[in-house]
Length: 83
Image (cartoon, rainbow, N blue to C red; front, side, top):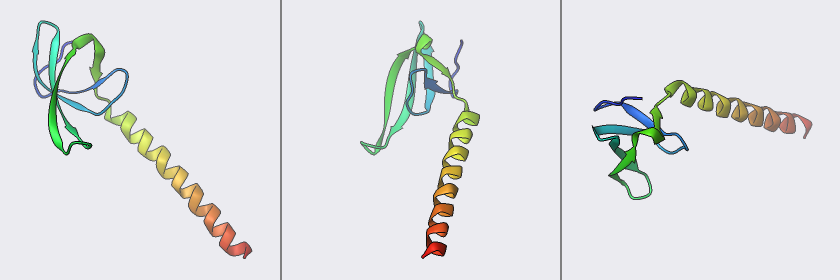
């Protein structure tokens, strides 16, 4: 896959979303924000290890989390009613 400056990508094995800064000789320089360090970092990653970012998959994960939260609230409400 070919990447261009400004593309949002992910490492195939997981991790945060990365912004492509440059591409040269099969190496992609990416920018990301490190929550642990509280600053932006750069990484050079081989292009074969990257894939286009899929924000729909992120949305599905959020939806799944929300439904779990709803189930927990329902259980809490049932406990309140039983008491």
